[in-house]
View 1 (tube, helix red, strand yellow):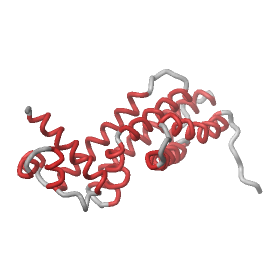
View 2 (view 1 turned 180 degrees about the vertical axis):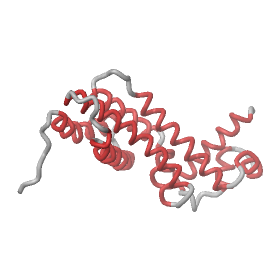
View 3 (view 1 turned 135 degrees about the vertical axis):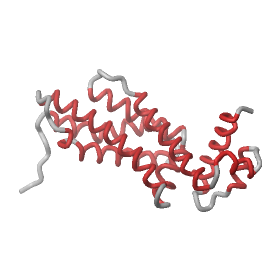
View 4 (view 1 turned 90 degrees about the vertical axis):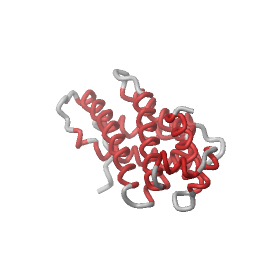
Length: 205
């Protein structure tokens, strides 16, 4: 078997084991057995358990970012781009629950350098969503110089809501990616649309 294919096989087994068992509980013996290889071969290819977990985080993070970016067609109306991005996000997290567990549940709870790997991925997604919302706001207000900082908190809130909803959707039988994306779209776009039209909600005086 070519080295790249063997390494992919071991990485798949590692993601499944880390995602289901957790970083602390997972063992290299389990990973080797699931991959159908010897434990020395896992160490030969991927060094230590820490290095293997870091490699899993990077691979799953890159796949998630690629899925979200690939789901969006530039030039479409802002709501259609947001919808496509959300649908791609929830589809990916539903189809790759172990990878999502590695990213959202495992990497964040075991300190550096794992948490930083996930933070880099999240920053990229937030920046992408910020740009998307900013472009829509600039068009709606006829202000091409509207700073991205004006909508950055909205992007943070939207990404955080998507992460929480993905965890809930994966743990709730019968919830589809389309239903999860529709829920968040209905929750977020109504408010975003009002903001685009200059109709923000204000607290009572």
